[in-house]
Length: 93
Image (tube, rainbow, N blue to C red; front, top):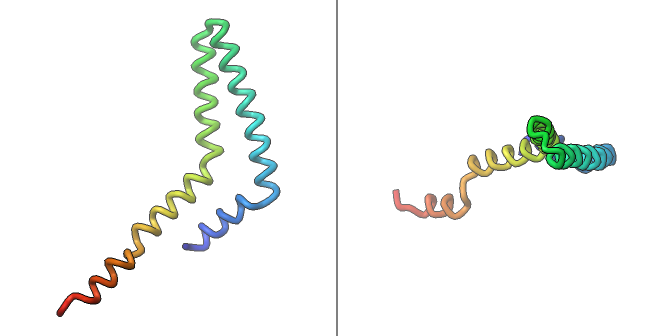
């Protein structure tokens, strides 16, 4: 893996990141309450607004996980499979 991957994966292990995750959880709950309140009041435009806010919020707070997943997928696609590599070496020339 590259240096960016290591730095990003270490970021998730910090105490500060855990504090952020806790804050994000509380903010997510507040957005969900607003969605429920708008839905109960029959306010479709307000419901759609808060649903969009929640979708954008979730997209932002999962950016780190998605970046790490993309880096892993890219690394896996570049690394030759050990079985394929051994079979290639065993082929007669």
